Image (cartoon, rainbow, N blue to C red; front, side, top):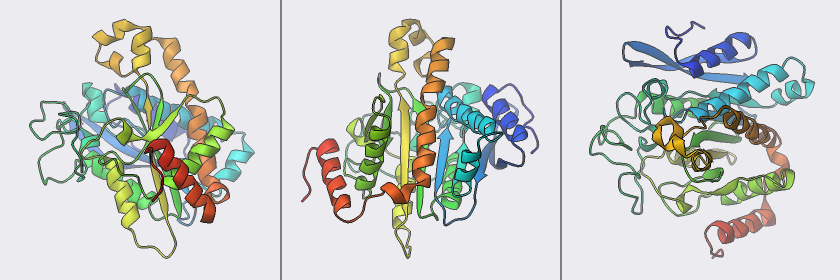
Length: 347
């Protein structure tokens, strides 16, 4: 690995340290490069575990929005934890014999360098996919094509996806979609006072095909971590958007012909940053303060609290055949999910 020419982006420097210290364990490649302000930043995809495509995988993503540094930091702390455990944890080594882990902690380094939500071209990477909402979206927030000088810009009509968005799609298509089972978690902040786990769809209020599987995953998490504070829900319960990358990838996965069912469940960890503002109202006067905990002990608490969730995803993916519902259980989970999230009973 050739270190990036700029060391003033702390998250990128930490990622490259992890890659260097984990040489022989982590495998890293540059999937695209971003130029901004006479700087050049790589976008890395890092893998760990067994590459056999018949085995399950989990993908960890962060930094789609340059202002939401805490999302990248959560993924990096988890990678650092795995690196430490690999030195002594024999159970982790055994787990990785039958599991693939994929990391893209810093999807939008150009936006992070500039301190903007969008990438250096002014495009919001989570409004950039070729997916249009089926129902009305909130003005502006749901995605707009007026100008890159305004927030939530989708990019020009019919233009290719931005390099960063396309890099994520390529990595998911190569590393995750061919597998019988895969999970993705994308770490964000900036909505509400509660930590939420969102699943598709964002472009429609209709339920996804794998609704029963999502409900089963929620159920085993509830049973294992009885006092957790996450709210599981489809993103559509809060608002709809155009151009959601995970909706796009979920639809791609659903359209794939396969001799046996393949399941891809993309999730979003939406950290409730309004709580940090409530405890420290002065954060409202800082762009970064709206999306990140600025006080050290709160940042450390946030970085600690999500490790169990990220580790749970790896364990649940590795053991997916033990909890994934089928037959009558599949119908039961779907009925419970429709009642819980869509307030209706199955037809």
